[in-house]
Image 1 (spheres, rainbow, N blue to C red):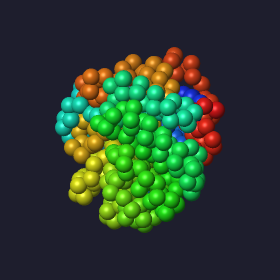
Image 2 (image 1 turned 90 degrees about the vertical axis):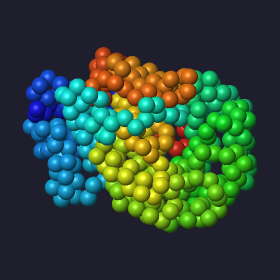
Image 3 (image 1 turned 60 degrees about the vertical axis):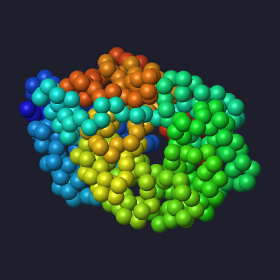
Length: 383
């Protein structure tokens, strides 16, 4: 089997643009993948267009090790955000072609079925004014859909520091949500790398009574040592990794004992191959993975296949029932949770098990939308 063509499709929403890649083979099969690039859609498209003729067109989709080496080493460059996201596009679409050609789900090729059901947590649901009662009401609706976990950034557009008044307001939001959903629903508290180490330490300590499942990216993720003050200040688990792109980006966090949940994004980390290696490395340190996933249905499905085959996979992030829920229409078989227990079920169709609906994609042209974390009202995810 050889790859003949590569085609990209971009779907726009007010706050994210979803890039889909389809690789067509000489057997007539089409492999599909997706990346939500953070604020650099045109750059990703240019990278795909430049690298595909060199390393993808004419290649055997089974040769994913060679593909990764060509992009990461033979280009004589240092792998980074854009090239690793392009590689992830190629890699995932190749695995989709492999699975389809063999008539098996991708998870069978990644190690087989370890998890029959994969827990999910909701994100993108708190699109409201920063009023504790309003956000608590939305949280109740999330749980009513079946979710047993939900993520929240209660800190507005804070940057670096947080005044006492703003901290009390954030705690009121978290407290209202905890009261609304009860003690058994997991709360993941997102900090988006907003704070200095000292501020993050104060905030973490204040959050302890609400028993969050984790606190996420308490300080900017470039400096692992900055996490030391947070680690020393609280017993709460710390999650990080969504802005990591190569193994070396996680070394200081993992080997320094500064992370409890590894959140590297499959679509920004080069695809399935490096994620399997990362899972093994994390397991050596007794760490679980909860990969960042802000994709639409294709990227979510790729994460689900990886989760099914990965023993130390904790939980799958999911936006698509809340932010831009129409993205389910972009494919013929969109992954959905079972409302009985808030879990995804292991898929059983060959490959990833879905295909793009191009008519639905065409109804949502590019918007230039991007997340604006340091502007007031970003939570509403509107331009």
